[in-house]
Length: 259
Image (cartoon, rainbow, N blue to C red):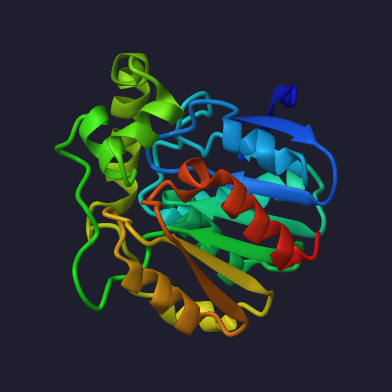
């Protein structure tokens, strides 16, 4: 039987931010991909077996209010800093997947007082020294999300046959917000990589060996930039590591924080 999370909202800088919360243990805050947050996923159930897990809709995504003024991922990181303060969270393990990993990294550069650990998975935010970060703007849901998995079978196992229809509206809304935040330059912030050297908390970088969205060299650059970090590459997984290899993902995070 899965976890039955609570669903509520909190006001942050005049914006309503929806979040789910479930499980028990150390506090963990998980930030979602650019596709938006469809809700409480099977991978959240698994993490909630180990953590008091909080999964918000990032401002501008799904059921959270849109900050119409926001034009950078750092703007969202500032709002998430306020989210942590509003919930009076302490000793937070911050977990960011995809775009959420970029938000998490930006947040850690400016505010690691209440953070105990940082986990970054498949995150853009750094300009790859080789290759490029895939452009999702001209893609539909099915094309982009299937590209985020190492196989069509794993995509279907996570989202099902009707996902493209079910999540079309969420995808269009999320993609518009992502474009506002990441368009120029596309999916990176030149100042992030040098600022990561200021982050002192332990950091774990997780990457899928078959990530076709954000090249693995970005994971290596995150590892090299963060002073107290390690990189773990998961085989048979693409960009959505936490969905494809949930058990391994949770195991790595749990071992990392000593659970």
